[in-house]
Length: 70
Image (cartoon, rainbow, N blue to C red):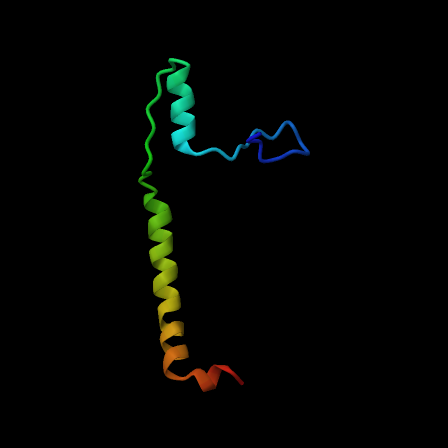
C-alpha cells in the first residue's frame, strides 16, 4: 500500500511517515533510533548560497519591475 513505484518492483521506495515507521518497529519489538531533524549542513549551506545569489535579482525586480517586463 505504501510502495512509491508500482511499475518496477525492484525499486524499494515507500511513502511512509517516520512516525508510522517508528510505530511499526516498536510493535515488532525492533530496536530503533530515529533522528527526525537531520543536520544537513551542506544542504543548508547550499540554500544560503542560492538565496544570496538570487537576492539581488529579487531586489531589482521589486525596484524596477518595468525593466524586466520588456
